Amino acid sequence: MAVVGFDLGFQNCYIAVVKSGGIETVANEFTDRCTPAVVSFGPKNRFVGNAAKNQAITNPASTVCNFKRLHGRLFEDAVVQAERANLPYDLAPLCDGRVSAKIPSFFTDSERRSVLDAAKIAGLNCLRLMNDTSAVALSYGIYKQDLPDPEEKPRIVFFVDMGHSAFQVSACAFNKGKLKVLSTAFDPYLGGRDFDQRLVEHFCAEFKSKYKLDVKSRVRALLRLQQECEKLKKLMSSNSTDIPLNIECFMDDKDVSGKMNRYWSQAKFEELCADLIERVTVPLVAALEQAQVQLQDINAVEIVGGATRIPAVKAQISKFFRRDVSTTLNADEAVARGCALQCA
Ligand code: ATP
Ligand code: MG
Image (cartoon, rainbow, N blue to C red; front, side):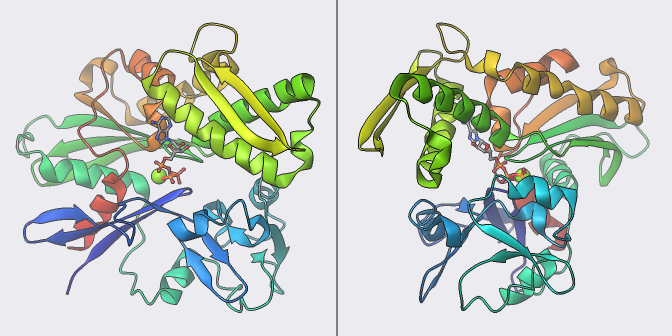
């Protein structure tokens, strides 16, 4: 019987399987190893993953995305109410007060919101729910042949993960066959989407003055702008030149354009996000203090999660630890691979 590990991300999911002595991250029907965490409800069909993401703009009210934070919470929960403001679909309380996504008609399983319930719906026998940081540490430990013997001084590794919604840090001590988590720290409100949002706000203001368009008054336009801003953010990670943003027939048949640059010329991404970049340090300080280790005792700082590809985020982590960060692990797939290992 095959055992698989899941990374249920806020934005993306990955699935890894242990097979003939190795771990493999499996591809979906689009031969893509990354599957968007999106479910879309059409009049007759339910779409999942890439197919659902394609509906995000044409069918926003019935396309459920960004729902990881809602699992198992009450509708009145402050977290739910904060998330609600950013969602293109409606939320509603169930009779027991838990939150549900309000989707037209046939969605009869709307009560079954928690992750374990979702696993059951998919016909999966969930062996264990793991948190992301433990899974990442496991995937690291398994490949390191040169860990110190049990009686020796452990190797201290910090794992820093910035995903789409959250930022988490853990400090771990490794010996051969032994892994101890020394500390963990989080900023649950700092992730790639906050960087996207800064770009969105910037272009909303620019398009208002340049084209007299009120982008926020139209949900489709806003969603398109969000998608374009995320692409722009990713492009800026590998280019330091000006990156154009062009959207045709954006609103009222108008084409719009703008540009952004990482750190120079008129529009500066790093300036727009300066406070977000500063906030990266806070959980790092907390994790270091709790772990009771000195900077010079740390053997490696491993980064994972898509948003650690933002050069300023990476630089901030590196500056704090006063060393280059390592990317031994697959930034996107490490969680799923660790989960697979745990249960193998
Ligand atoms: P979370 O861990 O918060 O639950 P997640 O696991 O779904 O979310 P990841 O898949 O680790 O998140 O990362 C997704 C984020 O990484 C998105 O914000 C995405 O835009 C960002 N990202 C991916 N590639 C890049 C890149 N090259 N440059 C900048 N950001 C990137
Ligand atoms: Mg993640």
